[in-house]
Length: 84
Image (cartoon, rainbow, N blue to C red; front, side, top):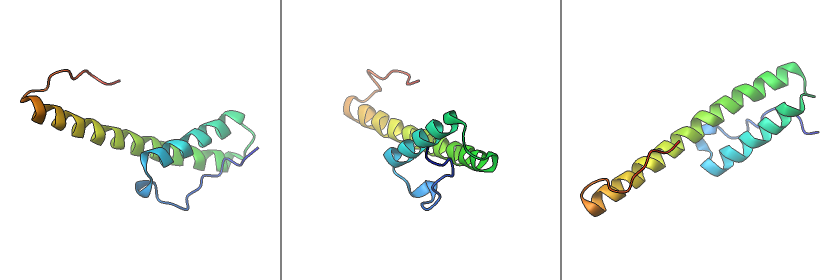
C-alpha cells in the first residue's frame, strides 16, 4: 500500500486542475484503505481538503470564462445551465 503521507513537494496553488485532482484521488484511495498512521491520515486529509478547494476554484474560474464567452457571442447568456 502507498503511504497516506501527502506529497507536499509542490504547493497546491501551483498545481493544475488535473494534477490536483489526481493527487486528491490518490489521497482518497489511501484513506479508504485505512492502513496508514493516524498522523499521516490527518495530514493527508488536510492536504485533500486544500486540493478540493483548489479544484473547486479552478472549476469556478473555468465556468466564469465559459459564461463570458457565451455572453460575448450572443449578447446574452443563452444555453447556460446550472452546473452541479
